[in-house]
Length: 333
Ligand code: GLU
Image 1 (tube, protein in one colour):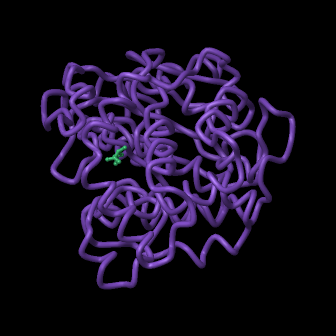
Image 2 (cartoon, rainbow, N blue to C red; image 1 turned 30 degrees about the vertical axis):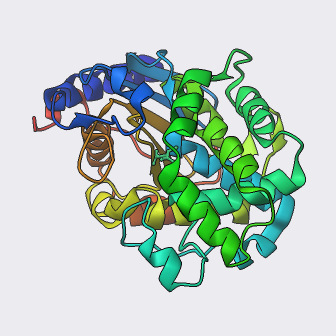
């Protein structure tokens, strides 16, 4: 059996095993347009640093990327503003729900990290200062990184978020009052919601985030998208802050830098090897997809490595240094 076939069979076996968790959790309904998804949908796509894509289930189905956009927003803002961005947002886990107002009030309007809502809104403010239409810029970057020119912003989701914006608006006004937002609150919120409303598939997302597995090199662009040290730093933030206030639990279970969204998607990075996106709309109480978390845990387990080993021993690019155990020797879970 050749290695590509073996790889494809591995991804299919991950999908089969993860299906046992479908039906657990609840589809997000606080943004009404998201509530229309079936809880039992599931897809997974893996993009190696060689550019090969392996997928299973509904990997080509587009869904609302929601907070996964925060990882791209951060990348673009760091490209434009460099380390001055950190005067507006911190780099530590929040330990509080992603839409908490309490912390913001207590800590002088500076969000704990770029992956909670307040932090992403502060990052979006920096992009509103830099680009005429930040959401179109982000969409275009997503299109180029995914090599998919059809990626679009779902206006129904965007409008739904705008109508139910009260809590995000409260955070934005609080930051504005503390002098941590330069632009008009409505303009920043519109841009933020548009970015969260990007519609992409597991395949699109695995391709788009591969630069974080490849030391900042974006194969579809044929260029170094961000510097290797920045790629490492973004992965560190994903590892410590990317899974809402369950980041520690997920690090313990799967040990991978990852970002989830309330649309049910999770992107995860195996530095030096591949990027992977799993999607299933039913969420746990922290807002993370139950089945997508589980499949990433299975994946990490199959690889037979802890995250520490992966993060320190993986080569900068090329063929994965690991190989999954053959399906026959895997314990069923
Ligand atoms: N756009 C969503 C919000 O601001 C993002 C939620 C998420 O995926 O965490 O509430």
